[in-house]
Image (cartoon, rainbow, N blue to C red; front, side, top):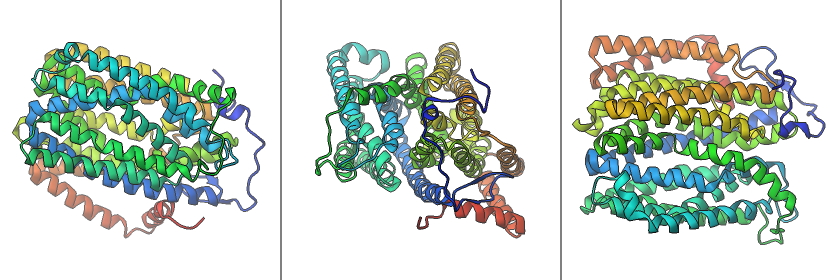
Length: 531
């Protein structure tokens, strides 16, 4: 492995000479020497603002969906439903085989439109994964009666599993087509479908199923139905930018296959692990500790993942930009975009996770008495997610540099720890054991990815400015949360007190001129403006 700062990645080794704009000016944000072209700042600003808005909507709708599931179907029923969703999530990621991430990496490096080469990548990515998903769907549907007793302990198990397999090709098509939309259209397009449209339709359909007195299988069908609409919408959005009606060439060359699948195949395994991160724990818990513990862990995991929607929204927004910058050899600009996005993630995510950890009983009380046992697992996972969000979009940085193999190595280590510790801990500790196992996997994967990204990019990523942001935000929020819990308990009253004190503290800090300058810098980054 080359020394940091001197190594080259596949993305940068063949990069063209760097031509910087003459109007580059310094933009104060994190520390001395951090500057980039104003065009890149505005571009990441527009994308970041839309991504954050989408993340906020998605988070709210995801919470509504979880409440509908756990309230409507109870601990055992929600455990079965979460297990079925987990099957779709894991198999969908496996059958996508990394093609979705490969499109996000490769398409921004090619010219779109009727005369460009971007359109040729679409059949290269789509046709193999549709064939694979169809084969898996048929094989799985034929084996439902043998597989269902392993994952489900309810009579709805076979119907749930059969629906999961039958929906697999549509799920894969949606994922790959949305990745193409993400690569060639403004981020608002994919946010509108993936972060607003689908999440809005799912709780509405499940709520209708609950109101009608339908069972878990009908509820799962409602969860799957919006996928069809998303496939159609994504396909329509690709027609114009790829020049599909203007004579764009769709027949790929051999080089197209080598380019895309050379990146995608190593990513295939890590993508399956990424998509199934929580669902591995849900399935292990269902198999080793029963549906009730699985339902508790599923609900807790949903809370833990909700905070990552901020990071996901920004990742969706800036990944194509990072690929383009790294492909042009502009590693310093890409690293600065990464640091700015990471600081925003920390500022918005860490207070939420500290509140989740300290006031876990208050949050879980919204699900009912059957989920009180999830308080300690939720606190454990909140700590893990602070590590995850603390390194920001480092895994996206690693992938967009073309290093899907190094990313695979990190995710394999994380999966090994999650599964290995889960098998040991879940039988005796249920949802808590699953939380400990997942935490170990999350921390190991992110540390390894951060080290690999630093080497691949050759620029400092987690600098002192990022550390100062983390210390100030995390320390202040922790003190407020702990003092509020000591005074008013860990229930709703303590949470309300903590939120009130946080609001007053933020208002007080805004009276400081230096703090106001920092906030204005963040707002400038995230406010859309003309290029």
